[in-house]
Length: 181
Image 1 (cartoon, rainbow, N blue to C red):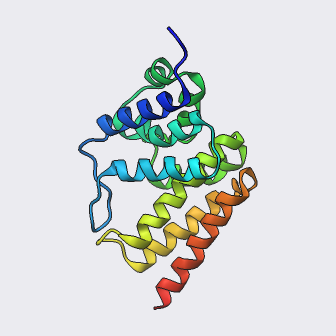
Image 2 (cartoon, rainbow, N blue to C red; image 1 turned 90 degrees about the vertical axis):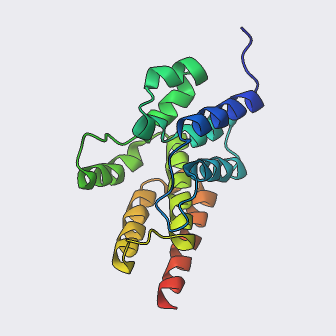
């Protein structure tokens, strides 16, 4: 079998993610299809100059964590590089949420640079969504706590890509202005 082209890898990842996340919705008031988040993460990475495997991982980054997809399935479908990128940013859902969040902060500086870019794109997308469509049951304090936690995670990644770090910083500042209005 011929090696797939870059565009095929990305298109197949988008299709795989769309099928796996079909019934999942975002937590925001608009309850957008979850796929919108995955497409945004992939687009942020593409705009940052990421390679095709990293863009594909943007689409797939929550499949292991949220959809019971295995690392082996991703290796079979997309190769070891894509599967490993996804695995690097996957939380262990068997741990309590507070522990998972702390581990993200602790592990971020030790991720490979491309996995750090994926982590940053995910946080950029999450912050964008929190600004435009916050969950109705999230207080201003909870949103602020999420922004502060995300900033801690990004601090461990920012050297991987200055442009992504700058995008995060713009959202972080924008949130501050929005909270004061």
